[in-house]
Length: 208
Image 1: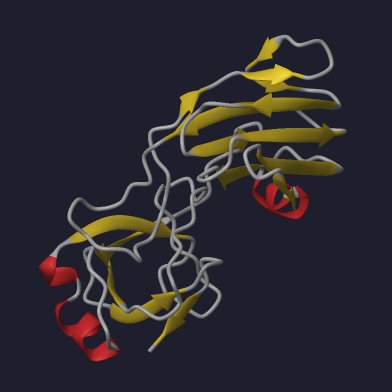
Image 2 (image 1 turned 180 degrees about the horizontal axis):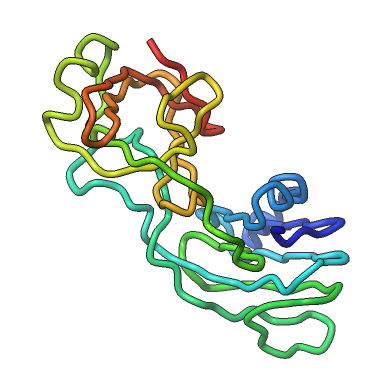
């Protein structure tokens, strides 16, 4: 079972303009046992954990896994995570994780902050080729998408449908996100089945 918490809150702060934003990540974290936050434009992040069922560890990265030379919008799937410490606001100690109620502040770290619970057993996954480029229409994406460059992604089924999500890893932990309008070509690995799809900001797929 994935790690869960009764509450997982993240306060993003920008000191220069005295602006802050509160994010309730509880539902997202509990559904998969991890949560990552883009810290771009913020000076610090304060994470509050209430009643975790297991230890939650902290990681950071600057790598959004984008393709060199590819213009945005493109799916951002952070990669190459490294362990990072934050300041426990209860005793001012440096901590790389937390297993009880507490608040931890992060200042100058990478672009993303990952809150990772206990590792769970790998889910069964199926490999697909996903086009590195995006296209303006479904026909172009279907006909030439994976032929112009592709990367391996994964799904929990070998037949995509409206509820499927593509992942960057075979453990099915890092969803791939899009803008909901650009088209991708995708093909089941070692199989002739192809699709033209869009991917929205929640990772949901729409098939042409």
